[in-house]
Length: 157
Image (cartoon, rainbow, N blue to C red; front, side, top):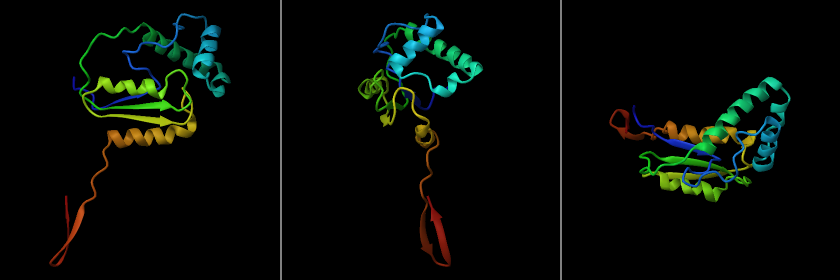
């Protein structure tokens, strides 16, 4: 399989640091939600308004925490692709300082972007995040140089 071209990480401690807190993935739903609220700033209110959406969210969150809390990093060489990291400025669980540690996991470029908000980035940052990712995945074409030649203009790359 081809190697990915770029790795994007958001509000996630690098694997060599391990989890910052005691595991919560096996807690009953009510305690799991309380731990999410206490450690990560809670679940957006709109999710609580619809039980079906809450169930989908809880299934995904529990799977995410299970993988995160049980993973043990083996020593591996740095990745051959750039890493772009996103940290919430007010995230007390995964700080910008800990996100900088992702830099040791690449032999290519590393970039850290600190955005407003906490662990769960606010909706107001979505367009900015998408644009930053798009600009790295789809490089912007270079502006062609235009020169005047006899009888008209010619574009050069």
